[in-house]
Image 1 (tube, rainbow, N blue to C red):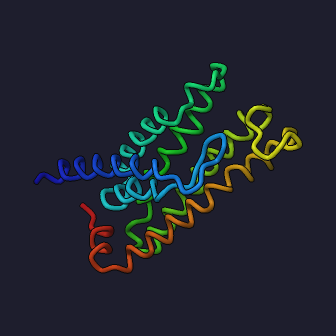
Image 2: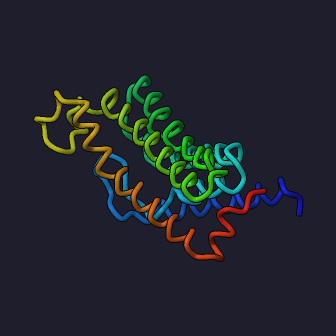
Image 3: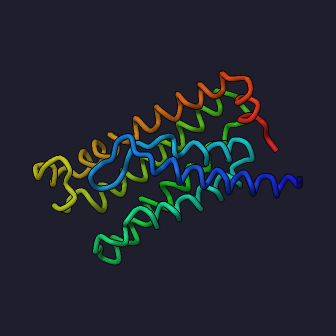
Length: 191
């Protein structure tokens, strides 16, 4: 099978797997954000196996699906808030996952560094959205009204509550997979 065709098929399968895993919520935040059953990992694996070009393409497709399934269109947002949310909470936040393979040639440590990097970038995108778009809207205050005038702290806490466990679970699962000889070969195999 052609290398590009194989990468395309693997990417499509991994996007579908990521969407299904995203539906398995371990912890759901009240206004968006959740700890899922390793939903970022399939997209990261595309980037690790085939490079960041394939990773970014797959991640962008995943971001578009997240927009459709995320419910952002039902909140009655202003046009500016809608555009800001689409960019920060979806397009940027989920597309950066495709950069996970940035350090893949450095082996296991490079792969873990890439995962931590993309999880940090995703957190920063949600964090920026939280303090720019959502933190001062009373209907989106998860911790009580006293947080309304503390947007940076509010966004840090709100987004950290789900992104930190999501990052830890993804790193631990990747390390476990890399300690199994059969899956290590699959993860590190680069086309």
